Image 1: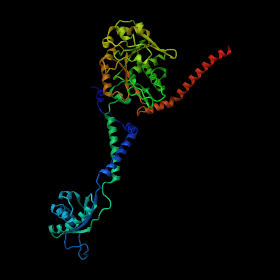
Image 2: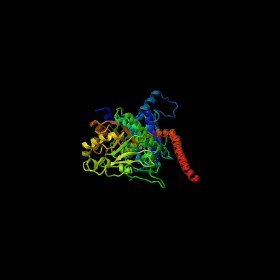
Image 3: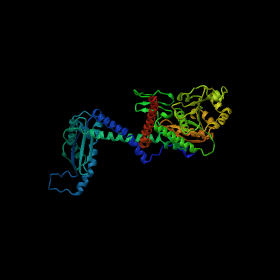
Image 4: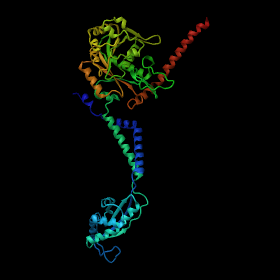
Length: 517
């Protein structure tokens, strides 16, 4: 198994520059997610979480019951202090004993169980000194204060009765808390913001790593070693409010008031799309190094709906602009579409010729009329046959292409999607090279890799890939096309202005003889 084939199922590798670009492009999602998490955390903290109040009392630990803090006549050496620190842990254990806590409950007069009170009390040494603090947490601030002061009354007596020669004296009594200790609205809100921020970044990065949808030229290179010959922008996007699907499917169509349908074929396509097809035309011309007078190019795709038929038409038109003799044949006899994209008759067509119903001269039609600067010939698919794969594999099909080579410079076969039916594999043996059309944000690496393997299995030569329907404002191509438009927008405007001036001059020259008459 080749490295390219292995790579199709593996996560992508994101370099630092691409990662930063990805996160900047999705920054609005990251910010919105963090903000939503912060708001939700604040609402939960404010309306759902019950506020808790804390009251504390502090004790001084002495390992000599005869000593007193206020007795200046008795000195306390370092050994006494060390022993007192060691006693803190013992005092805490005594505090948490069942008998002590039951006495505290009785003294404080609160209605709670031993286990509940154990969860409410927390004891710890203060900064490693011989002073330790007992903190009581409760939803009721008065209850917390009563329990803490009850501990201050019960614990010293319990300690003196259990550990002889020691004592615990109250340093600070508990008071009623004026504000809740938890939850911290500001702290929880900031924490929610940070959690949303980190989670959104993690989800975006993981999705990008494991997403197999083809979005960039690098994604194409992961699963196939063939070059991307051209990236054709999405001509179907008329404006920010309108989108038209390929293949005549307009289920997702949204129209704009007063807007016209976009031109997808011929000289009326967008400037950037026209230049993309010209680039494709140039690279295809350099792909053939032999001296054959006519080259047959098959155009296919891995999946239906990737724009292969539209690419076939515009490639034929682009080649015809060089005064080349071009023939476009619709070989997709199961789902023909050229007759819907071009003003040609559906019948008779290729299927009628291959079944010997008509001759070749009856199926060849011409596209291009008075307002077209160039044109080419077209053969429609004809009537849908029950056995298209047998017709494409017939000797009559092979002989027809051999005969047509003498009359044309280029013959373009619009083939069915190789991932849908096997018709394209049969026709691929008749062409000099196959052009694969891959639609951005639609096809995936697994399907494309399978298509490449199928063509390789029949020894078909893949000329390259056309990345179709690219978004001009996408992460990968936005910068490229914005720069492209800046560089050529003046040229485009000058070209349009010159065309209008020439047309106006021609109209004026036609009117002058009439005035002189």
